[in-house]
Length: 97
Image (cartoon, rainbow, N blue to C red; front, side, top):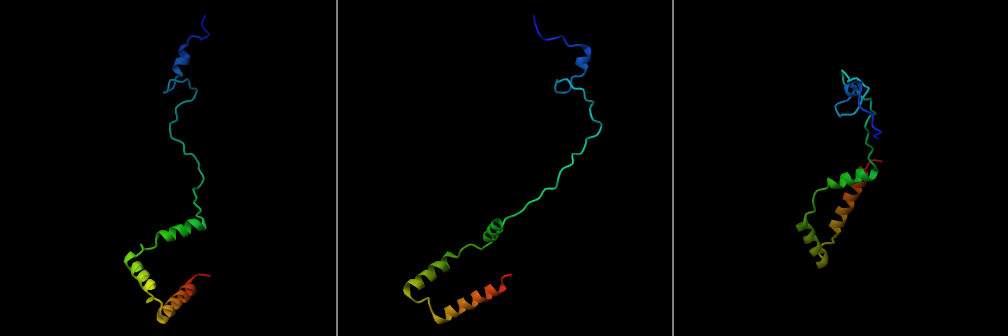
């Protein structure tokens, strides 16, 4: 003997679109679901990585020429050292506090 009861006509009329029995009436208008606001917080590391991706590509020809000058002992001059120090001081003075 089967434990499954026969379906009555009222049970068949309650079948939903998926074939499951439902007691809910179909909604006339879609309901809006209240949701919170989305928010993104970037870490200092993420900001740093973003800035490093904006750095222009390395100029290999210039780097190779300077390496050769350094190896030959012709790169380090007093004028170049003064220029480098001035540029570094200007850069440090332009940083936000």
